[in-house]
Length: 194
Image (cartoon, rainbow, N blue to C red; front, side, top):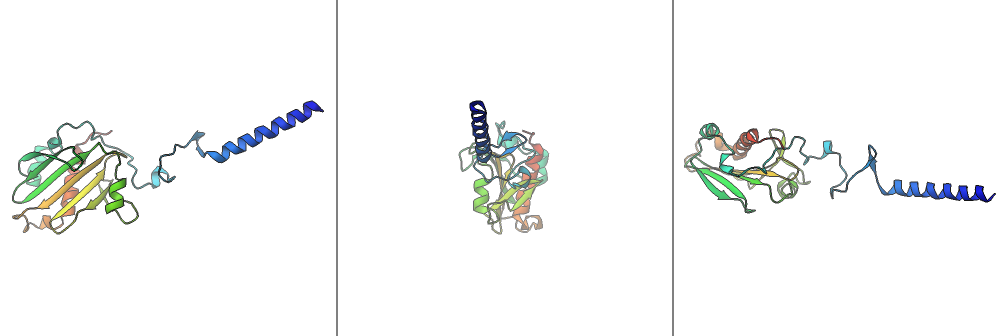
């Protein structure tokens, strides 16, 4: 009788322990899901998740993000070293037709989260796409547009396009966000996978 009571008590205790653990963690495929700080959203439904990340971290010269052929196609001027708002090296090309600034962000580690909350669609999601990558347009007016493209979950490519004084008659520059997206797409085509 004592063995049976002890066995019943042990079985009940193990059952409670298993139920308690099951209530504390969710699993997928037998592995506990890590707490990322985001709401639990599958990667497929998270608009900020990057399925095929690119690598900006290995860059040492942002002025080489566009090839000479691409710069000629864009009608860009000579390159100038610059700095981004977050202190990282950037590059600028400008002439009387246009100004382009390309700024990689590999230091802040926020991906598009912060930018999407400020400039996104109102719900913290991207409001654009560039070559299949989530993007956010910000600082938009008749002559200027910034596009921020998530190239990985933590890295962002920022491209600014501004129409110059002699570029206002160019119909291609009538939509500065389309031009910013075009430049960002060219840069993306040059980036290696992560």
